[in-house]
Amino acid sequence: MTDAAALPGQPRGAVVSGPATARAVNVLAPNPSAMTLDGTNTWIVAEPDSDLAVVVDPGPLDEGHLREVIAVAERLGKRVGLTLLTHGHADHAEGAARFAELTRTAVRALDPALRLGDEGLAAGDVVTTGGLELRVVPTPGHTSDSLSFHL
Picture 1 (cartoon, rainbow, N blue to C red):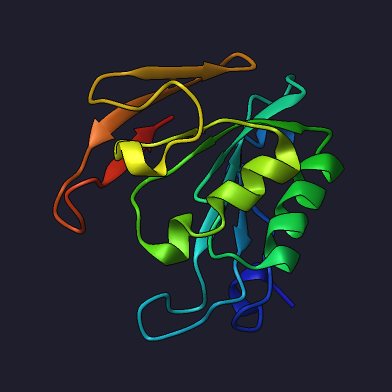
Picture 2: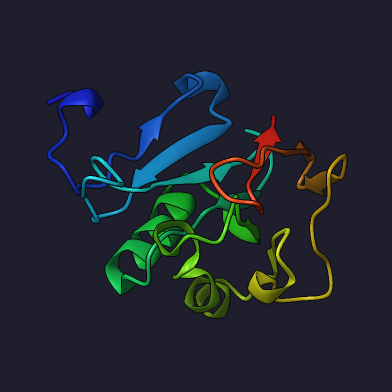
C-alpha cells in the first residue's frame, strides 16, 4: 500500500522531501470528515543532521495521535524541540496543550490565547530550532490568525 492509498484516518508518516534529505514528514490525524478530508496533517520538520524537530499543528486532542507524532519523531532520531500552530481551529490546535505536556515544549502561535510560553509569532519572524529556519508568513483568509511557514 502506498502512502497515497492509506486508509482514511490512518497515520501516513510519509517522507515528503526524499529519504536521504527528509526535512518534512506528515502524520495524518485520525479525524476524517468533510472539513478535514482524510484527516488533519501534522508536520514534523527538521534538518536531517539535527536531533531536534519542530512539530506544526499537533492536531486534535487525541492521545493516540499525539503519541504517534512523538513516536514518529523518535523513529527519525528526533526530539520535539518546539510546537507551532498555523491557526486556532480545533482540528489543528486542540491537542497543542497536551502535546506540550508530553514533549515539554513551548507552543508558538499568532493568537496569544493559543500560546504556551513567552514567545508568539508575527509576520517576518524566523523560527530557528536545531539549524532549521522557518519563515513566518501571514496567510489570513481561512482564519484571521492563519500563518504559513516557509521552509
